[in-house]
Length: 475
Length: 83
Image 1 (tube, rainbow over the protein chains, first blue to last red):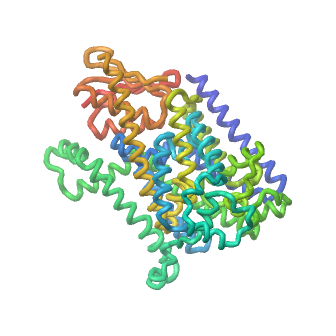
Image 2: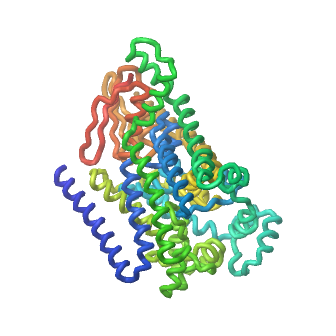
């Protein structure tokens, strides 16, 4: 055991040392790579925190429905509250990179597809990455074949043309994009539907702007109204449905009398929030670090006088990396999935598939070489950060998927890949970041995601009940 | 890889979910406990650390006792007495 512990510590040191060396080499190659190095280390920090707190958005709704355990849902809501306050602070000092997303029913539908997928695969987009760091190869299957390859294929095929209304086809054609960049069903969907949807940010609404001048619109409109109040309401609802009865029963036993007062309920909510300290503490830390990440990326943009890393790649002469808009995918904050799609597209191009002939890669996000892809480095950082944390706590275990897990991993990954594209994000980009930034479309995605998770749990309940019945035949 | 749920004696059971990842260990654990009578004990063997926290909190909420928990050779052994 001790020998194993020493080996794990050595691995942790080796991985960290290798990342330090890589960062140093990037810095020595060109100072512009500081931008990319920031992504590596924020990814690393996310990975460590996600692994330590077992922080997975799939677990939030899944464990609530499957086991009645609110640990993760509480952790995420705590993270959301802290992150929203930091987002508001950054927005009020003009140091935010946040941008709202097109609002529409597509967000809800995409969230639902993603929700089913994350339950089947056993982890959300960020959860799958940290679980790869723990040695879980089911998550690798989900991430590689679903988030990477599945997503890339999804945005480049015509398979869904039959779903595209003529109105969208006409609206897309009217945008005047080059024909060689408008080849897939997803292109029609983006240019013909998504781009025409309004974006909503509470602090941008005329009524809020008028009523709340100055910085207060960010704190009240974005943080309080969009994130804090809904999060507190959700905490109360979770407490009332899953915890209250059991807690009050236990408390009455301890008090030797009835426990029905307001104080008892407040104590119950506090008990629920602090029941899993490692998750709640990580929730607070993740909220703070996600805010700091935005601050640092904005600082980098100001430092190099750019709005996107693609401009720096162009200055370095890597013009083939960037899209026709001169940009690459560079969210400026915590984000998963788009960069995995880029990685998948990069691989498919090596097999002769043209991935530049669509809006997603060709016009919007570019296709940088993986070693020059800042957001992809963030994903690698998450995997390595989680690996280091898992090694340090002797929890790393290489597990190959077998039997049914291969099916669930692949199916879940593909659904996550397909579910993250129509809403332009996943549990992080489409839910967590948006809600904390004052964009109510994040809640739409969240509701869809929870609904999808409910369906996934129902399916697994049915599946496991069958297997249990078979096992119990022998009793 | 297959899930095993066995009766090992009078009022004692064994649930082996090694190799399984979330959410399977916690779902099988919950279902095993549902099939048992009050006072029965199940030994749960798993190798997915993320599931342990959930199982512990589930037991705490419902009133089951986690009487033993140890890690051997990368596998986590938990003994749960149904409350």
